[in-house]
Each structure stands twice: as C-alpha cells, then as structure tokens.
Length: 205
Image (cartoon, rainbow, N blue to C red; front, side):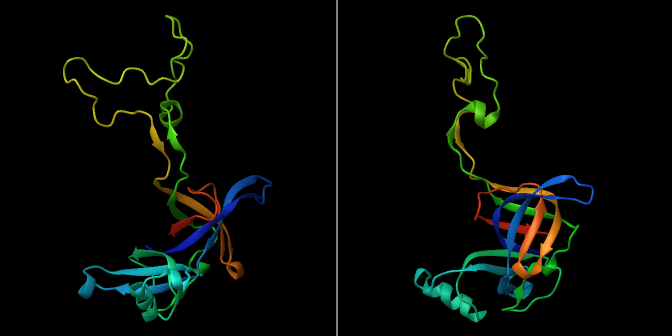
C-alpha cells in the first residue's frame, strides 16, 4: 500500500463548483526519503521504510546517524514502514505528493488529541442520572452501579468507567483528496483527521 508521512497543518474550508462549502484538512505530505528497503530474502517480508522531517544531528544516536547515512540523508524524526508499495523504489529515493491524485480516496492515521482523565459522560456518552427523583441531588454525572453482588464479588473487565481519554492511534478511512499542491508539498483532504496541528500523520492510498 503506497503512502507518505506528513504533518497536519490545520483545517480550513473550500467551495466546490456548486458553491457548497466543504470542510477540509491541509497536510504537508513529504517529501519522504527511502531510508531502508526490506526484502523477503533478508527480512522475511517486503517493505519500504520512509523517513520524514530532518532531525538535529546532536540529538541523534550514532546508530541512527549510520543508518540514515547509508541512504545518503540526514537523521529523520519520523520513520514508518509501508508494505506492498505500488512502485519499486531504491535506497535514497525521494517520494513526494505526486503519488496522489485529486479525487482519489486515502486513509489517514494519526494520534488523537489527549483529553486527560475524564468521566463517563464525556468519555462514553453516559446520560447521567438526569436530575431524577428519589433524592438524586448530587449524582448528575455519576456512572451508577459498577459491581455485582457477593458473586462474583468483583468488577468485570472492560467495564466502561472514568479514565484517561484520547491519545489513541486512530485511522480515518476513505477521505477524498480535494487538491494536490505539488510545489508546496500540500494535500487538501475532505473532512477532519485525528491529531492536533503540527502532529505527524500517515497517509495511505
């Protein structure tokens, strides 16, 4: 599956030919360097390792510097493997947004925004007690009963309770590419994608 590593710039909106306002996300996609070519004979599978976003040399390990030097490039901050790449690439090749075309559909993966420790109403959509009768004066956003009786005398695994929310790997599928701005390495994709601005995303076609 062909793809690129990118950075989420932010959201905006554009008008289509019918005058409809379409919300969209702008992504700086690539250019990415092929930092390793995995083969079935050596690694047991075929894949391309791509690197994106230059990293300061003093913040890189000697092993990482040697690895990227084989591809003739500087150290990279983000490295991702793509299996079943559509075109054959060699070590050190540069891949840019030209692999995408306007109108095609892509999958975008990123890390969702972290929201900290949240209760069940925000995290799972519970309705709360809802100011009901029977003296419920301070139970508006409470989770309700979570346990059983003397058997099994424990809380079941997977019970929806309060906890840390967000910060998960999320993939949004079948997003349409509205524009490809090749000279600035930008993709304009319909809809929203996970993550905050300037966070890394993976675009797959």
